[in-house]
Length: 196
Image (cartoon, rainbow, N blue to C red; front, side):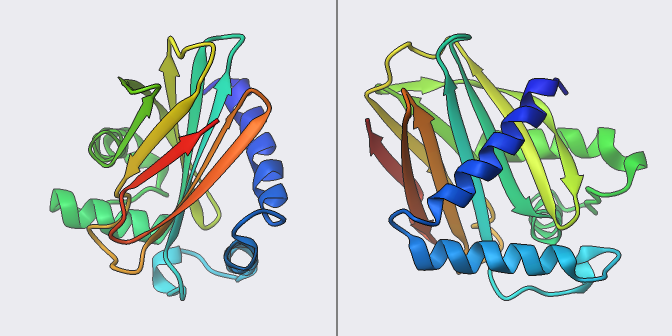
């Protein structure tokens, strides 16, 4: 995984923090506080401790200089493992390094079937870069090449974890041309349309 994606992760966290002052103030505050508290709990395998909300975050950053869209998805580890196990009828372990290679295939296929991005009316094909697990969350990285220099509108369709929870909430953040648009998708809503 390249260093620029880890740098993008740090930038994404700063962006998420700035989102608190935006449109979904209260929901974002509750989500961030919950995630912070969840990360502080002294636990081993996260699946053993339930959490009261089901949320995922899809962060898309337009890198006009490299003509790419850098995509990062953040999901609770235990929820994502449960969804993979349910969909693919096999045990999923996103924490153990010994299973990382076999889990890569499942994660890649799951994201391919549960997330799509259109830019200016054109479906964009994402390249799977990998995933990493950190504390309570799994971060999945994708990259879309040949992104247009000017993005006027985007449609993000996602059903991440919808096959597991009927109270799933997915937050979408899309940054381009020094503009940031966000949307909140409550199950069963799957599409967010953003105009820049």
